[in-house]
Length: 124
Image 1 (tube, rainbow, N blue to C red):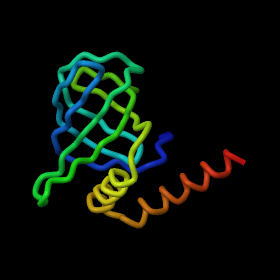
Image 2: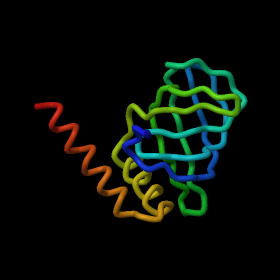
Image 3: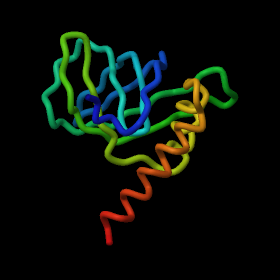
């Protein structure tokens, strides 16, 4: 049984990852509102914090979507990141990416609304 709260969509775009003084490229395989899987040969450790940037080409000007994330999954072919921090503009771009690449865009809005409700309930 899946505990996933947000839908994941396939999205093929390059990403730049910066961890400390180290910087490398990878290919995003999929995205959700809370994380992504990056195909890369780089060796990372679980729990490492990263600055992540994906650039959406085909727009003028190009749009950079930036996240702060943490390595939460290690595989032979890549790394899973959970997003810890995202600015409002990047959040809106991410929401649009997910909505445009999923069969049921309304589902994305429901998931976001439910997540916000849960967050407010846990803060009371």
